Picture: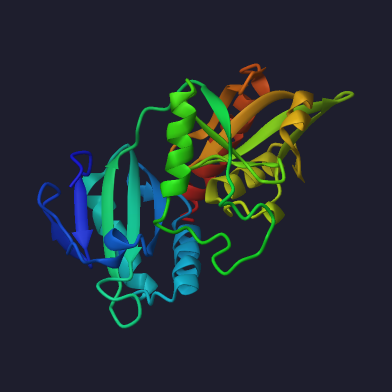
Length: 285
């Protein structure tokens, strides 16, 4: 088990993080047949846990995986968070189809770890993603599955080209998302500042952090517009940013050979997201 994990439970049974294991025949290992969620925890409280567990249930249903009662999974997450109490932590809930994708029982692994240090900025390399929906409907559309090999292959390709991470571009040429994050950018129209982000209709993941950012922007009076744009359309943008559970809102200073300012509008969104998160945690959401 990864040394970073500070707590591990399997089907609710707490394990030693250094020796915890699942059978090698588990379908999540053999076939990547499973789903997962990554939840931020702050001072022992989980950010939008209900939303994460709801998406976990939707994803599992798409794969035909029967989950334990939500109350059980929630209690396993609570136990993990209470056992570690990271000031800033990460909870992973990984569900596989177990030993048989049709007749077996789901296996649920819950882990915690400290949140990684956030990068001050990122440089993204555009990578065409022919496996992405790119607006086409299919049976696993927006399921958050364990099968991330394509996304991590794109990340590796971008890193080999000298970038920090990848920006996935559809067969259509449209800007979609990152391998593990949503994206957005800022454009100026006269005196108006507009935050743009790829529309869900493009088949991108219905990101919890993206939803949080939209709510926070509304709180702060920021104007957001969901769009369909290609790489050339980014020439209008003054700033570019990524959004994810582990990264909040982080400025992007380059997308391929396009250079962006690490400016005040991304910082304003980050501040609004932090305020919204604090308010929701205080309210017990």
